[in-house]
Amino acid sequence: MRPSQGANTVQPIRDLEKIRQIKELLIHRSYRDYFLFIMGINSGLRISDILPLRVWDVKSATHLKVREKKTGKIRRILMTDALKNEIQKYCRTLGDSDYLFPSRNGDKPLSRVQAWNIINAAGRDAGIQDSIGTHSMRKTFGYHFYQKYKDLALLQQIFGHSSQSVTMRYIGITDDMINQAMQNFSL
Image (cartoon, rainbow, N blue to C red; front, side):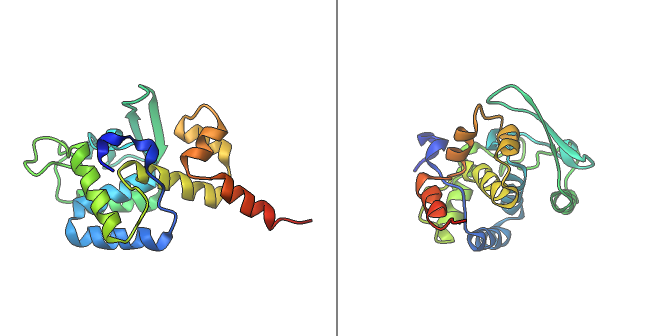
């Protein structure tokens, strides 16, 4: 799948071992690319909201505050301690006005296509067979948030979705998964 084919066809990365493998691959290729993946899977932001971030947006902040490009809504997200630690390590050599994810020439942020190529290649190299792209990071955040907290209403609010059924489809909770869970349920 190419980036222009749309975000609805990519899947979350459900396997924690595959996430670990992608991190390992990316950290050896480029710390910027590794940090892009870390930011994506830990914030739940769309790639279009991640790429324009500058160091001053995150360096001393407790919350990420972005105006979503897709909806125009202001979104304020608490940064976990782990994400703040990664930000501090990553930003050590950057100036406050630098883009977090600069393109190779540095005067503009990484493009969406470049970001897609980075994430897609890492996913392929980690052996992921499903369609994967930059939106997989947001879906991965959602899938694992749901698996940990089982709070679909909260996740719906975080993503700004109109209904819980939209959120379920979005994070890849399928009828087959529901049927399997029901098959093993008994009181």
